[in-house]
Length: 496
Image (cartoon, rainbow, N blue to C red; front, side, top):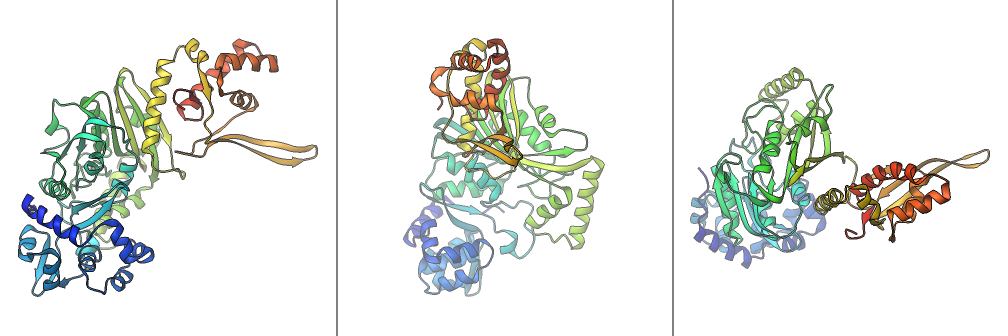
């Protein structure tokens, strides 16, 4: 049964949490950096040592973050009516002891603190999670919050809200937030999260885009059940019932239909790496020929055995058990039957346009400067500028500048006649940290891009210095300039 966290209960709980100062900063201050980090690694003893005083905050930390049973009388002093909390599903009573029935933890975005309800994870439960398990705030959901642009919008859809964390972030920059989910339990917990934090969020239950059919939004965020494999649903938070990467493909195909003109969508996604098939070709096929700007960023590629083991453990299933062995075998058989050699994972940013579709598929498996959300917005800005200035005459008339975050690296080796250059490379030291090999002519051109002389003027000067014809230089330079602009290594002055 979904928890029964009514508005009145959430109001009383909020007062108790405020009184105990149960917020992210206070928890870190109580535990100290080392004990807090140890608790995040699943090592609770330092946190127990730091919470021996028995104050209300100590009790809440032990109850909800450490996962220990607490004396009923002490919990009553902190939260009030224990019977009401048990009836709501927040607590579990066992004689004179009380345990957490739900995960309830403070969460900060740097601007303030929220509280988030979710189900207890496999470690807290001491066994596998339920089929309708509602995942709390984890690495995947956090990565999506960082990969989302935060520009003011009128309406935002959180598709598949889960515990509601994406909607919480959306409340900072969206006037109206709508959250949907197929799971009644997820919607109950997300609704309670919104109530507890005093937020007004519209909620609707149903699969995929059905709850908002016929509506358009300025922004959509989605953390779908993107796990790749056979078409089954063991756990609703991760499995879609669609084969392979069908869930990610379905969301990408459906997003343009719920985006207002100029609206932007962000989602986590997975895609198959099949023998003899380029992953970029695969995901590009999910898009229409016109009406979309799309940026696919691949953050990781997992080999099948590692992928299966990771997701089994995530659900609390030991891969060495009989159940784990059977699931592993069926999963790996499906991968083998479908020529799957790897599973890609990453972010997708889409914008609805009235132009031909523009797609970029890029590998970002190296370290980069997080968050990626500002870069996603900047990529869309640069693509729009390039489209508006696609005529060579307009591009040549543009005044460009090299951002201060771009550096030139030159690697040379000693030789009989002195140093011999091995490589000349441009490197963005911010955002995605793109690198691009270059040559002496491009280096000379970029050296003049200081925001004062047009691109045409710089190419004329470069032609005089090199005895190359203007036509040769323009033909060679324009594709390079377009690529550098798209990657943020060269910017129009109006975007700098």
